[in-house]
Amino acid sequence: MAEDLRISFVELQELLSETETFSGFLADLTDVAKRSFREEVYCSITLLRDGRRETAASSDDLATLADEAQYSEQTGPCLTALDEGTEVLIDDLRTETRFGSYSEKAVALGLRSVVALPMPGPDRPVGALNLYSPTVGAFSDATLTRARMLAAAASGAVGVARRITEQAQLNEDLKAAMASRRVIDQALGITMAREGCNADTAFGLLRRSSQNEHKKLREVAFELVTRTGGVPPPETPVFQPAPPR
Image (cartoon, rainbow, N blue to C red; front, side):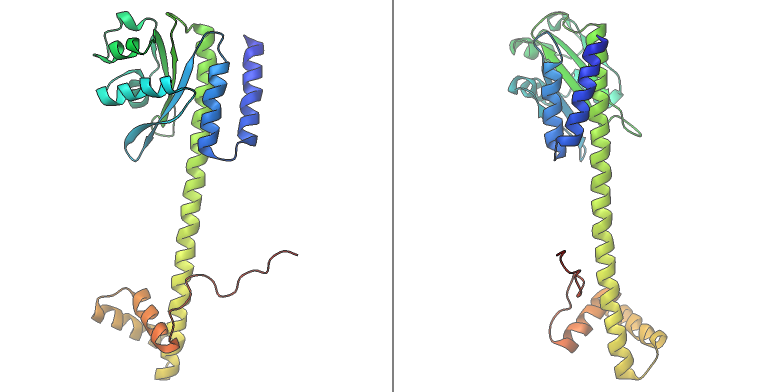
């Protein structure tokens, strides 16, 4: 078991270093999970996106169908793992009674046992790693240890992806702020030249126009620069860094 875990850990490290996209990493992770078990196993990852639960990756269409049956029923092991942050183990779907008609639908797909593990986040689970098997009692203590490690890896990837997304949004916000400041500075220069006043007075005049016209200061500045120059001001920096030689 220790050797199996070591091999799985090394493989996960390789995935993190080699996979170029977040969705690609999750897809590869479900394949690793499928190969990590001696029994026949299908794997999927359920994520919460914009308040909706969806399958972000799966090793097989069967795993996706098993997830979708839960979404339509609004109940099931992966939804419980995601919503409550608890592991859900079903040794035999034919005798499982917790999830209404979901168990019946899963059995119809040829499935017999399931384990769903929460992917922990800062405040609440960000997703669930789901493992399905056509074998009764497929998931033992040893396989659950391996599954927990895979769920932790998936959780870490979601955290990294979230930070990258937040940083990208921050960069866009900063660019927008810089563009606004540049346009306002141009409008200040135009107003100072026209009115023969200093920067503070020019800013007061622009702000008064903003209030009187019920427009944002940037909009007033944009219109002034456009009227003066005959063309709208650029939204990106005028001076771009020279390309490397």
